[in-house]
Length: 83
Image (tube, rainbow, N blue to C red):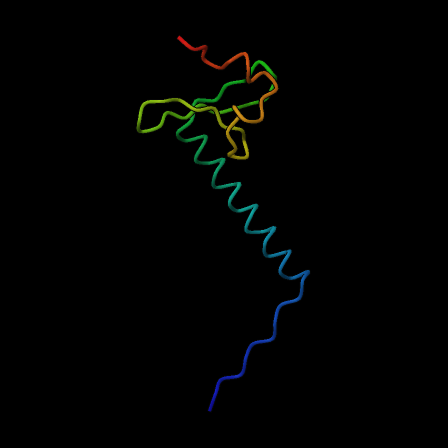
């Protein structure tokens, strides 16, 4: 005898579950940045965390986990010039 299929979830239920999952991810990411990152304030005024990667390079991250080098309005000021 085949098992009955479960009723599909409503769109509001799915959205609420997704929002909760995103919030949980953001909280975990912020906790990780606070644990391994070096907090600073960028010249643009945004609070960021510098994280040193296994290869030794340091990368600035926003509080949401995105790379600050991509979102900073002063990005060109920080780019390394060619040799």
